[in-house]
Image 1: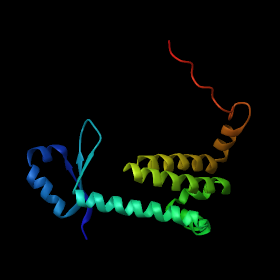
Image 2 (image 1 turned 135 degrees about the vertical axis):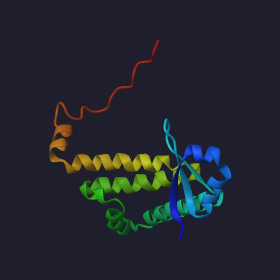
Image 3 (image 1 turned 180 degrees about the horizontal axis):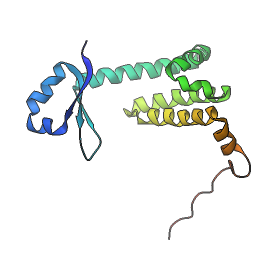
Image 4 (image 1 turned 60 degrees about the vertical axis):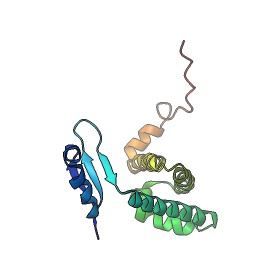
Length: 157
């Protein structure tokens, strides 16, 4: 089995493009480290398409399981995939599952997985709040806690 990825400086791709890209014969992707910007990934298109098909299958399977009332199995498996979910109240776990299915289906259709990552990060932060009684009390007490909806900003002149 090939390694997941190998890290190389971005300059290596610039100075030795053929040798650098040949490394894809031994790894799934190459992480190109850059000093003044975010790292980049280099991978073969066939690998990217295989990864996308797995994500598509997984999101559709998840959606199908939820639609067929198999939420008990999903709820049971969720702590294995997301251990922090144990800190969420039961009704929040249901909301997480529903949002995850809808977001995953939409993200796959757009070929953009960023919305799934954002959703998981948001829910993880919610779990962090529930896991810390002091923080939870601070954020939920009145009147300094949740003060309700924020009105939209006024239009700039």
